[in-house]
Every structure is written in C-alpha cells, then in structure tokens.
Image 1 (cartoon, rainbow, N blue to C red):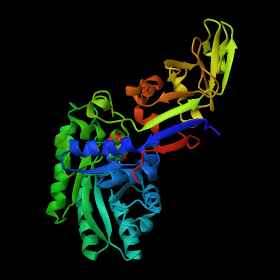
Image 2: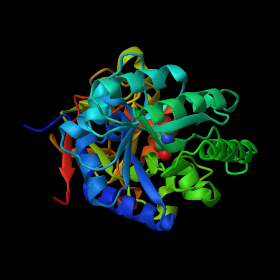
Image 3: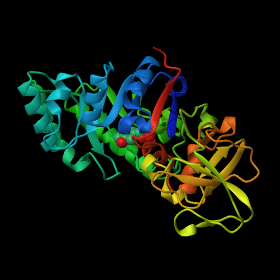
Image 4: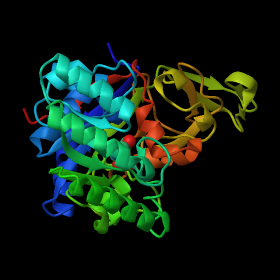
Length: 377
Ligand SMILES: *Cc1c(COP(=O)(O)O)cnc(C)c1O
C-alpha cells in the first residue's frame, strides 16, 4: 500500500543541524526543543537522534511530552516548561525531568510532589522579561525567591537554572532585545545573590541562536532551526547557516482526468481551466495539515515542474492542473522538501498560506505516514 501522504524525516539532516548549531555557539550547551511532536517530525525518534548528535538537553513544553520521551527510553537531561495545576509532576520528578517554576503556585505543586516521592525536583525559574507570556515578572521574583529558598532548604527542590524567552528575536534590531537581556541579567543576579548555584542560564531561541551571540549565556534553546527551517526572513535562509531541511512531504497522483477548457475545479469553483487540460487528484488535505488558505497558491513539484494547487484545498484532497506534463497514476509529488533539490520549501508554503513556517510543519496531521531515514542507531 502506498501512503496517501508521507513525511520523510531525515534524521541524518537533523543530526547535522544539531552539530552545526553546536559549532555555531562555540562550546555553549544546546537544548534541542522537541515540543509539539518535534515540530511535527516525531518526538521520540527526533529526541533520540538529537541526543546521539550531542544535544546537551531536550526541551519540551508539556510534562506529558517529557514523560513520552522517557517512555521511549530517551536518556539525558530534559526540561518541561509549561505546566498546569494537577499536572504530571510526580511522574516527571521520578523520571529525572527538570521542571520550570513560574509562580509560587507552581512551586508549591512541584515541592509537594517531590516530597510525596521523596525526591528533589530540579527546577528552572522561568522569568518574564518582556514577552508577557509564561514566567514570573521581575517585580514578583523576590517573593518567589524567598519561597524557593525555603523549599530548597527543606530539600524538596534544587534551583538549577533560569530561563526567559524573547518577543522579537526574529527582528535583530528591535530595542526590546536589549531590555529583555537586561531584565534577564537582573533575574540571574537576584537568584545568585540568594545563594542558588545555577548550572544553566538560557534565553536564546532559534533566531537568537543564529543571529544574536550576545544572548547565549550558558545554553541556547533552538527549535525550528534544528529542523532546517528558518525562524524568519530577517534572520536569513536556513542554507545561510548550513542547516538542512529535515522533512520532505510527499503525496501521490491518485487519479488523472482530461477536462475541457473552462472547467470549474473543486469546491466553489475557485479555479477554472484555461484550456483543455489534465487534472491530477492529490490525496492530501487540510486534515493532513495542508492549509486551506493555500487554495490556488500552494506550490507542488510534479514531474520536474512546480505547479500551484488548483482550486480549494479540501479535507482529504486537492487538485493540480498538470496540462503538458508527462505523468502517470501513482507518481510521487513533493509539497515541500529541500530547495537545493528543486523542491518547494516550508517557507514557500508559509508564504502561500499567509502564515509562518512553524505552523506548516507543526500542523502535519496524525494521518500522515512518517518515514525515518538515516538514523544513527
Ligand atoms: C518554542 C520555544 C523555543 C524554541 O523556539 P524556536 O523559535 O523554534 O527556536 C524556545 N524556548 C521556548 C520557551 C519555547 O516556547
């Protein structure tokens, strides 16, 4: 059986990207971010490949993602930074997963869980230095530090790290970058003055990792760049940094039919053929993560040429006008992959769909068959 849609995941390219980033940051630690199923690429396989390639840490948002890594036998330090009340704290603490603390409430939950399993929870203080999202405000940090000091003295937590996240790292000249660095340094100073021996101070996402060396501190936290995708046009192309795309998304021609000029194609006839031509049915739709907003725009490499989606993207399928091409049933088409092979890029699809590259890869759906290549174990 041929899969309707296949995401080929080149773990060799992922390993190359991890090594390239390690070199780029010259000896700093690298936390490879594998949240959201490794940005749609497959959590456990990519986590293991990253560790094998020298990742010093894996980073995830959810505690359940960290647990899934351990259930997949992925070793090494892991940090999960986004928790909710009644989250899987004890499981994480028992499995040596570091947790982020963003408030007195989250500290209490973590300290109580650590006490209940008779372990010391390793925590990173997540500071809000200007994104106004997750994290403790600097104004609330002194109070949290008092509670952390008490918990550490009681033997329930060990404060090992401090982290924050940028609002504008993909705009290298944005003035908020300097002010966030200053706030971050203040947070580091406050924690150190309280006697915590921090192992890691970390602030840089992919954009900062690639473009802003003064943001590195002890460790960087790249996500999208590890998958060979640029964090944004201002930062540059992935190839400028010698990063290779990890995912190639393909589908197959499942029906070919000849139609006359003037034929309306797909729901609401958003496309009309301009001449007698052939339509190819591609069994990939928005349920697979092909954005509906790429209607009439998404680029597809078919028989050596790039054609645009013809008409609406449907739930399970879309069409291509393949007039003039030499094509047969079952032929592979490439939605995105490596531009060096002449394939459209993730960034091309993001432009076509009016979104960012992150959304294109993370929304690749569960129905898509993932095929792993070049694993190192
Ligand atoms: C997602 C995330 C990252 C990685 O961001 P990229 O832009 O993909 O590099 C790093 N840190 C935090 C806190 C995140 O949520």
